[in-house]
Image 1 (cartoon, protein in one colour):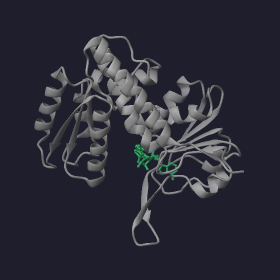
Image 2 (tube, helix red, strand yellow):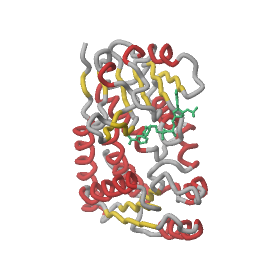
Image 3 (cartoon, protein in one colour):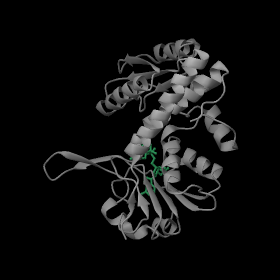
Image 4 (cartoon, protein in one colour):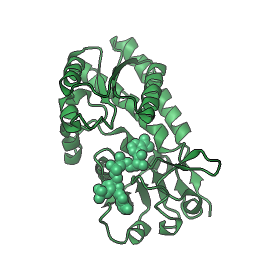
Length: 294
Ligand code: NDP
C-alpha cells in the first residue's frame, strides 16, 4: 500500500487565497486592514527565514505587515516597551514574537505582556486556558494547520483514535485540545511514555511533534492511518550539505499509512497560512465586525 501524500503546499495556498479574499472583503465593507507585527530579536538564521516569509505572505494577503528587528542584547524593558506600544497601536491586530528568544530574555514574561486579543501565536495563558476550557480562543498556528490537513483527508475526526507525540505548549498540548474539540479520542505521549510503538499502532491519526529525525518508524503505524509529521530536522546529506526530514521515517511510513504529510511541503506550509487567518480573525474581533468566513 502506498499512502496518499497530503499536499500541504496546495492546501496552504488555498487557505491563503481564502484569507486574502476575506481581507479584501473586510476592507471593502468595514474599512478594516488587518495588521500583523512580527518582532525578531537577534539574528538566528532560521528565524530570519521564517520572519521574511511571514512578512511576504502577510503583504501578499493584503494585510499590513510591521517588522521590528532588535539586537540580541536588547534589554528586556525595551522589548516590553515595544510590546506595550504594539498593544496600543490601532493598526496592529496581531503580535508575534519570534521564538526562541535569546537566553537573556524571560520568554514567559514577554509572552504574558502581549494583549491576549492580539496574541496570534496563541501562547498567552489567557488563550491557552480558554482553549483548554473548550472556549473560543486564538489557537497556535501549527496545531491549527494539523487539524486542517487531517480534515483534508477525513471530513470528520469524530470518534477517531489520535495520538499526539510531544507535549509542548507550541504544538502538542494545543493540538490535544483542538482534537478534543473535533471529538477525537486523544492519547498524548512524551519522552516518559512507555511503549510508544504500541500506543502509536492503535491510532487512526498520528501526529509527530518531537524534534527527533525519523523517530516514528513505519512498523509503528496502523495500516491505513493518517500521519501528520510536524517535525523539521536538518540532518547531514550524502553530498556534504544538509537536508530536512521530519519526525517520521517517511519512506517506511508511506508504505503503511493511508495518508501522510511530506517534510518539507506538509505542516510547515500551513503554519504561516494559519497565522494570516488568526490575524484576520483577531482584527475582526477587535474591530467588532462579524467573524470572517475562513
Ligand atoms: P519541543 O522540544 O518543545 O517538544 C518536544 C516534545 O517531544 C516534548 O514534549 C518531549 O517530551 C517529546 N519527546 C522528546 N523525545 C521524545 C521521545 N524519545 N519519545 C517521545 N516523546 C519525546 O518541540 P516542539 O513541540 O516545539 O517541536 C517539535 C517538532 O516540531 C520540532 O521538530 C520542531 O522543529 C517542529 N516544529 C515545526 C513547526 C512547523 O511549522 N512545521 C512549528 C513548530 C515546531 P517531554 O515533554 O517529556 O520532554
